[in-house]
Image (cartoon, rainbow, N blue to C red):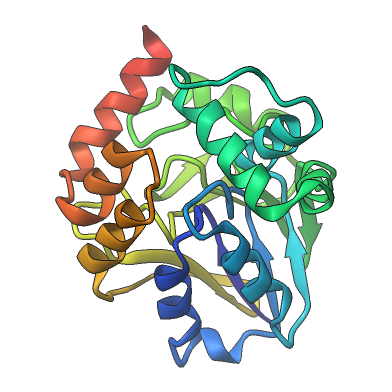
Length: 244
């Protein structure tokens, strides 16, 4: 079985198309959407593209889907000072209440073909586990996991590590990769054998189109796509946000 795992698309329809155009990805038997397909500037187009694919699609809930569902169910006051709340509100309004509610009902984890899929960790959709996180934090996050392979995302960076008897792979981010070059990251699993992949495309132009559409998270778009920041810099920022 060939499994295509796409994480953290964040409404970047151009990056999604670049991955789907890859000849290897075209041979997938099924697709796992590992969370945070939204929020993003072209959220509705992204969801419709994924929903229209002619192969089985399995969806996970990321913190992004949860936040969009929460924004739709109980819209808070204007969230100009809270960027995450603001982007969730924008996406909830674009995709409509029913789609937003459905996203909030997606599972935290999926297990099939010997692989446990989650968004951030098997226990939380927003746990920050980075390339710099301690062995103790990794062990705590994966405590009780029985399968040999776990796939996650959330930090927008590829990773491949051993945590005791568990191999953890971060599929990276399709839409906002913090890798220093803008290329879309994804994961391919062929008969149980995983391979971290990337697809180069005109990421700078994609980022500029996102900003031209009025997307408010300019810092993330620029750091990932328009003027990519070195991966090590972003990793340190994420890790320090946990330790602080």
